[in-house]
Length: 404
Image (tube, rainbow, N blue to C red; front, side):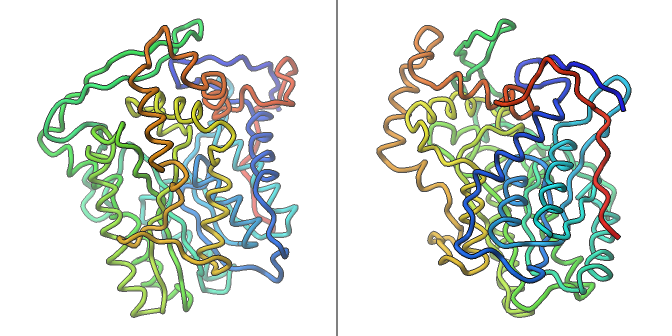
């Protein structure tokens, strides 16, 4: 197995390699940070499917499901294997670490690597549910963020874009130069044109989530009381023009409409339910690509400090609500709200004041830059406390193979 010393190399927020030991430690730290239930889950546990399980909120959903609900089942992600020249993607290493945690917890969790949008993956999952998990699925958590999707029926390829709707948007954003010095810039994003909105909705809306439910229902695999949740985000008025009121926001609105349709259907067929879960802000590989979000998140951390609620604690709360251990906290539109800590008037006013004052010369005193910079690096397994980055590390970590 190849071993080498890995030095972080990046272009902006994108890193070229990931660190296996650092990624493993990130997962282990998340596991420790997840609150243990008052009573350890017993028995075989409910059968769950997490689609998009290797990063961000999907990873948190997988780990929190294991610890809070004792789930078994299937986790799906799309990651690149290591090669002679490059490490695997960070999600590959995180998945290997998650598999070890599931095994140590005595939970039968199978990890599949492939295109979640494809019917081939849906068939593979359905076959596993039939032959390995008793033919019944209790939960599905959907957490997919992707730039492209191919429609299995038509073969049409769609690409999502990050654009405002109606008019160009000019906003502040946070970048770091080659030496790691912070800079606040103003960037302008041109408005959506042509079929940009439709393309983005086709990728990031509810079509694939609904297809997963339809595929599994068609095979008779939904248990009585089957519950599904798709993870979403609303965010601050400061970022609304590029996010909630932009092309991605149109996709999120479609996701919420899909939840209402699925909820009615599942209630009639299996006594089940479907919801969207609106999560709070976090540093993820997806969020760092959105203009303004990096600046907003750094400022939010500057306001809240340790009171900023990490994804693992949010998803622990979601699993409690999905399983009935806690009441389902829904808003008037039927969305589960895990972001209330972020969107209070007091917090948003404080962030808005800092946003107005944010400039290259002032940002260090307004945002928690050290935290934000380290959070970005931890996405790839770097800047993780307790990891010896001077030591060679094995990069050829295999994909986890389930026990017979």
